[in-house]
Structures are given as C-alpha cells and as structure tokens.
Image (cartoon, rainbow, N blue to C red; front, top):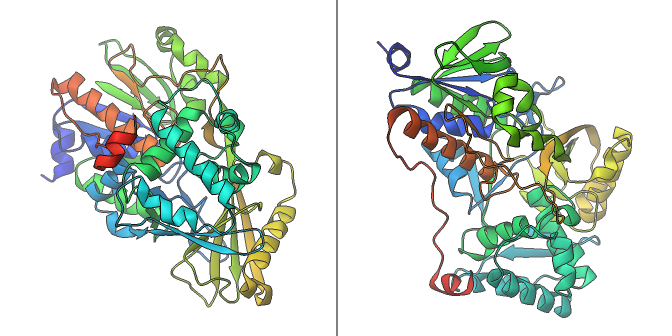
Length: 470
C-alpha cells in the first residue's frame, strides 16, 4: 500500500478548499500527521492568483504576474524548502534602480555593518535622491523603528507628518511600498508599511534579498509543489468547485462540490475573501457574524505586461523604474525560439481601468525605450497585457477602519486561511503561507490534541537592531 493509500485508509479527514498559496501551505503543514488531506481547487491548476497561463502562440507557461519574495519571508521560503522547490528560486542581493532619465543606482546591503546600519552606505549612493531627501528618509526610518505599529492612519499621512520631501516620497517610499503592497500610499496603513521596512529591510542584513522564481509559477506550484504533496499522501483535485459547506447530520462538516458530497472532520477555507461567505450555508454564516464585514473589503489591481523582442534590451535580471508607469521589469533567464521575453509589473494603478490594452502596452514600451538605450534598436514582436483587478485586498486605514479578521473561527471544525487575514504580512505571499501554517496548527490541535509549531520565526535581529527596533 503506498503512502497516499495509507493516508486515505485511516485517520480523520481534512478538506482544504482553495489551491492558492494559503491552501498549499496548509496542506504541506498537515501531510504525514495521520490525517486524510484532500485539497479542492475550482480552477484547472494550482497557485491561485500566483499562477500561470499557457501562451497560445509560443505554448509556454506565462505567469499572470511576476511574484518575488524577500529574504525576510521566512515562511514562504520554508514552504519552498519543505516541498523541495528551493532550487527554483534565485537569490539576488542587489536591486537596480533607474530614474526617469535612465540614471542607474545599485541598492545592496553592506555586509560589514550590523543591521540596520547595513543600508546606510547604499542609501547614500542613490543618485536620484538629494542629500536632503536621504537625510529625511534616514530620520523617518529611525522614527519608524521606535514607533510601534498601528492602523489609525495611512503611511501617506505619516510621511507628511515626518516632513518627508515630495521627492523622497515619490522616489523612495512610493517605489518600495507600492511594489510590495500593491496600493497607493493613502490606502496603505502605517502598520503595513512598517512591517515591510522593519521586517523586509531593517532587521537583518539579508532581509532585503530578492528571491525570483527561475521557472514559471505553474511549474513551481502546479507541478513541483503538487507532486510533493501527492507523494506525501495528499489528494489534490483541480477543476472541482465547492458549492457549499454546511453541517452534516453527525456534526461533521459537509462539503458539496459540483460533482459530489463529502464529509470532513475539519475544513480549511482558503479561498479569496470575496468568496468566503457565499460558500457557507446560512447556519454557518449566522454562527460567524464577523464574516459580514468581508463585504466592506475592496481590492487593488496588479497589471503585468509581457513583451517579446528580437534582441535583448538590458543586461540585468531585473530593474526598478522610478516615476514611470512601469514599476519593475524582469528578464526571463531562459529564452526560446530566438526571442527575448520581459515582464513589466504595474501594481496598484487604479487609473488603468478602462484604458485600451494597446495604450498601456505602448506606454510601457516607451518607458523601456527611454530607460534602456538597447530597447530603441529592438523590435517588439508581440505583447500581452494581463490585469488582475482583484489581485489583493485593499486595507482600510481611516479612523473607523475595518480590522482584519482573526483566523480563529467560533466553529472549531472550520478555520480560514488567506493573505487577507491578520497574520503580520499584509496581502503578500508570506502572509498567505503564514495563514496556511497557522490553520494547520489549529487543525492538528483540534483533531489530534497535539500542539505543534509549523509557523517559522522571523529572521533573527542583530544586537543593534534589537536595541533600536521596538
């Protein structure tokens, strides 16, 4: 009898609804614990919003949007290591910033200095910032380290209170935060912004390292990670949408799909926030009135422009563009058919809604030609624009803010996972994985009576960072 047959043969059953990162992380945390683990995904592939599509012309798997992780994303990196996918990630210790005029500044931590001083030398070398801008940024970072997180105001309001120069806001704070959290500064909370800078930049010398998948997200999640889960005994069914979750007659949960009904001792709902309530039977919704607030969430878009050229347009693996529509451009490492493929990411740009696709593609191509001289001699062979209008949930940061929901359910058999939950990393891959791990911990305790620790700690802080950061 193989491992999957052993898993199915005995033990309590856990159904995970949703095959995005949160659902995959929950499954990875539950396998090999004597539980029957079955993951249901409505789409034909795994990965959720971090997925791929098959390009009709080339036949290649093309990502909906390039996703990257920071060195401080300890749980996402643990998930990749746990599932044998770490070799698909390439670590970059240097970022390349280009001003609107094409002036390049390299951003790399100084390994000989303790955090958070490791960023000071590279900040001083940013050519698109004046000495006054840099002084203001340093002063605000020092204040941020000493000021605990709170959601009572936006990061825009906080930066204005800190007397940041318009250039510092536009060319530094906005560049980092919009890329990280996919929204405008007036809709990003101080708490979310502080998490990005403290955990992602200031606490550890390698926290700001960028890890970029060197394969499509489809290969990473739908092939490699799924294969590992199946080898550990999990059952994965794609193309099977869940219609309703309700209580069964024997106090188990009943999961109704488009093709069948199955009972479960516990269910993890790992679907996007928009679909959580509609999937629950009326009696479950009544038992969870806090879910009514999900209707108050709004969303923020991410657009991705894929371009194929007849020659290379830059000699870097990636680049950050400042004060342009195009925010981050990535070069594919492996090219086929003599073509060169680049992906440009545009996060949180609500103004793109309703614009013709070709208008957006043309502006992106003009951005690349303005910044990279080699692009002026290149021929654009074809381009694709993919827009995820509900890519991330949008934080509310006013005085009557909707607090992010706790993952703890008043129904112990039912728990939730997703990047919309308050797990310390807002609307990110790390947040999704953290929520999946926490859900797995609760399920193990509920069904097996065991307290387990699946969630990984943050990177350790240096002696100086421990003293400076509250």
